[in-house]
Length: 124
Image (tube, rainbow, N blue to C red; front, side, top):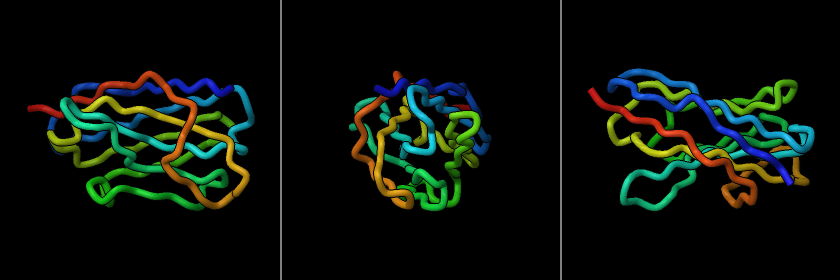
């Protein structure tokens, strides 16, 4: 069982930046693929980015491509989501999720260990 804890959510102005952190404990992070999701008010939760075990493969949903960057520091058991040029439509609760994955260089949004979320609000 993995423990997943997100942090870094805040109120930020449009055009601003924010960096979310996700600490995954319970196993060496090198054995784990990680993904970020978000759920806006009144909408379904959506996968927005994921990163492979070795960090060399990443995926982004179209709405965040070019603005968000996912990265990982296995020594710190932490995965990050750098969010730039934030827009009001990025307002959501952001969730981190993780799973053991045999393959080193891929990721997906089928996750089974979830954090409780961190709120990001983009507003003037």
